[in-house]
Length: 71
Image 1 (cartoon, one colour):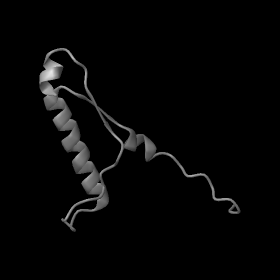
Image 2 (spheres, rainbow, N blue to C red):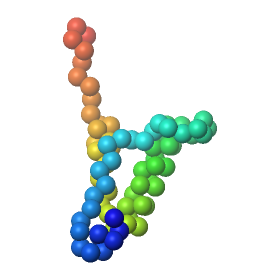
Image 3 (cartoon, rainbow, N blue to C red):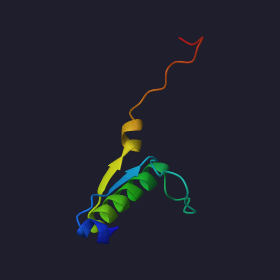
Image 4 (cartoon, rainbow, N blue to C red):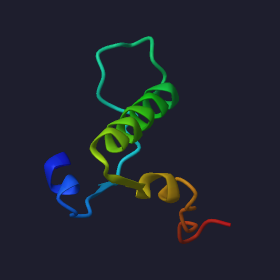
């Protein structure tokens, strides 16, 4: 991917998860795990010259519609 970027191609990582699951380290809270992975992904994108876009961050601000029959 870095080779293509150096050749002038544009590359984008689109991350559609907040990455707060999937570790064997029980001492990490989901919030800390998500922040750590976000930092790692952005650092990797920077090293490769790739744009990084996270739709998970945007989706975290969405609110679920009320269930039918609830107030």
